[in-house]
Length: 490
Image 1 (tube, helix red, strand yellow):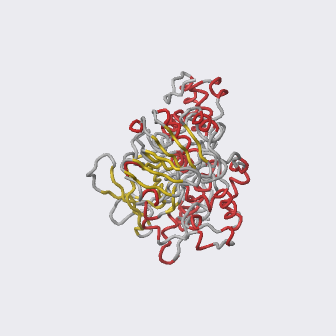
Image 2: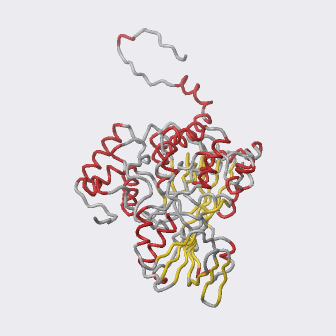
Image 3: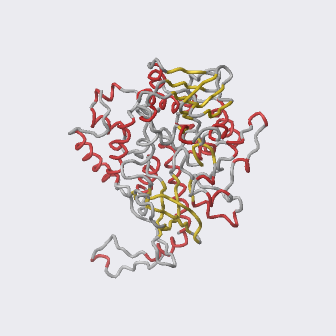
């Protein structure tokens, strides 16, 4: 079965007509009820600015517009059609979530990924897969953006975020030209839909990065010149799906050998994430007590998920692939053009290293987080776990409010941080392990949107009674009413 990304099916046109009919029936976009605010400069103020035009950003913007928040602007640093990870460092053949996972479509069946897939590739193709192919998922996201009309300003990076009175100033710069000047956008609320590394950065362990020439070490979630590694000996560090996915791409590009090493004595075979993908957990995790939320996240930190079956099988189908359990890289040193790696069980000589070592929380690593770093509560500020459950890494994650909003360390000085919503992986400790992944959008997006619309409504509550008293649009018009006194106000 082919996995071409661009759909070629006449039934897609029929589905698109159905989408338009359903959106019309649901009155999309919703009635715009948010009162605009003015800035002394006369500059336009967006109701909501979403940083990131991948699946989370699109889901949030679409749901906000359904709720009558019309002035939503999305920005994304990538060119149109390349948003998110799917054309970047996501190197798996298929998604890791089951094919029936829904949520981005906000309850509109014809906008769902299953509906799109069936229309484009046919019922037989749908029946033949357990998980959607990565290129076809990206094709769905492009189509979803087009059908919903979510406004996305591409080639636009966020390079700063700070308070502007009761508003937020988002500094932006075009990524299409190296010498592009900075601009500024104003918004009442900002949603950071910045993905898995939205809390900081992908990180190669220091003892590796410091020992190896920069051009001879890569992170699995960064740029890798796979063609240049043809005929090379490559060491991969990590046991998760990303490690195996990258190993498969290396082997397919002709690497002489790939040795995949990880510290665990055994590769995980049970995926505990699957057991918590039920509505009670996904909808209400954020409402559980701090101790429970901490313990659940600590469990997942200790008991990681296995690689995907197809990634594992594909890697092992190559005769020049080897897997080494209980093999952390205890010593790494450069000897000429070679990299010598020591593990508890064996020594290796590589030409290149690839580290599938995840991300770290680092507020200074991202332009949009630097101003927030010293002003927001972290979990270590709110909860002290027993020593046996301690995790310095988890303690750095932000302690978020019910609508994904940051909480200020000093409410009097930093109340503005509540206008920033962390709809990215940094929300995992507060909101749940699946919050901003595709399996959690069905429950997380309404929570995010509810938090924003609640704040917007409270901000304009003073105008509610004057609006009621000043409303004069008659619904009943008849000569029989002549002489009948109609009250001017309530």
